[in-house]
Length: 220
Image 1 (tube, helix red, strand yellow):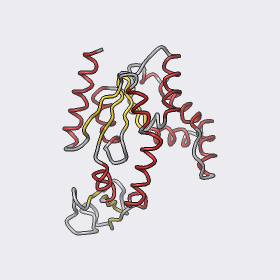
Image 2: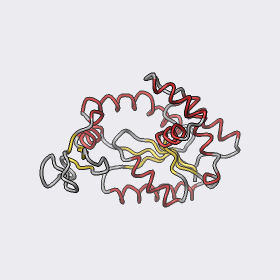
Image 3: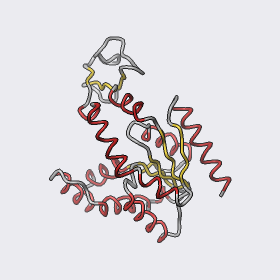
Image 4: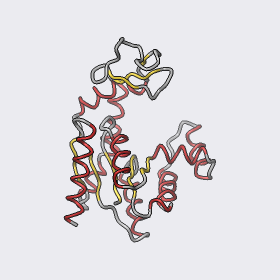
């Protein structure tokens, strides 16, 4: 299957993308991974992207699209892929359509993970990360450490990342509403959008998504 995953920050896209890609046996292609891989391998696209990033500028759409095209042409993506973080705006969605049309393939579904805005703010602003190991993540409401401010795993100090502050989260949400949310209407016009409630246990959300994809496949 060829799937695009969309949703606001804090909706659980990364977690669900990993779980769905594994279950469906397709590669999880995220924008962040594309940038990191190209930059670390010092590809021409990576060098170009880094030149913009070093100046504090946004990487142009055409560079991101070229990276995505290169990744989707890899052998492991022949049976399908799950795109996470791309397309990020309507112009990227149009470019993706053009690319897929050229390759005579099409998207099967666009999964829209929905979460109430206040819940998103609560999820992200409540995160606390261990200074010793960023993989040790806690939450002031959902996963409290035994001792406030202290990592249960290694005893390190727990802190709130700057980009997890409530003010920053609300700014990120505004960017999402302005730039990314319009692609949902774009894909609705093509009959591709499947809306998934992202609230509840991770396993339940994955189950909803897989059930919706199965229904979508049966209808086609």
